[in-house]
Amino acid sequence: MKKIEIIQKEIIDEFNLFDDWMQRYEYMIDLGKSIPTIDPKNKNDKNIINGCQSKVWVHAELKENKVLYTADSDAIITKGIIALLLRVFSNQHPRDILLADTSFIDKIGLKEHLSPTRANGLLSMVKQLKMYAVAYQTQVK
Image (cartoon, rainbow, N blue to C red; front, side, top):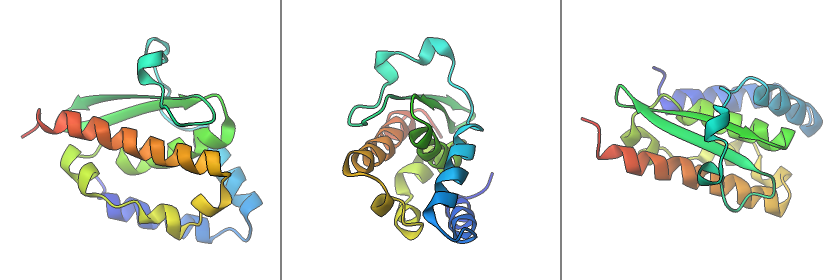
């Protein structure tokens, strides 16, 4: 298991390879195509993230003391954003998710290249992933 900080640094390095934001958006769209697909039964109102302009569903489960996330969105850029977050937080111990900062989002310049409603949605996604970690923290060793 890679540490969250290492994954975040890898993402920052990857984004630095691109010259402009069009290339970064294309990269995020490609990332969105590669996320673990959410089971259709979990694509329900209970798993929808409030505060997002588009629909985003996130499901979490605890396996071997690690939180595993699956997700989907009806918008390609949003799906790329959640893919980045899942890459950082999925398969991590709840405590590590809660302690992790999300400064990589600022370092890659993501928030400033999103519309205000998408930026709010991004914050809602991070908040929801951390809420799952809070819920599972009591169940781990």
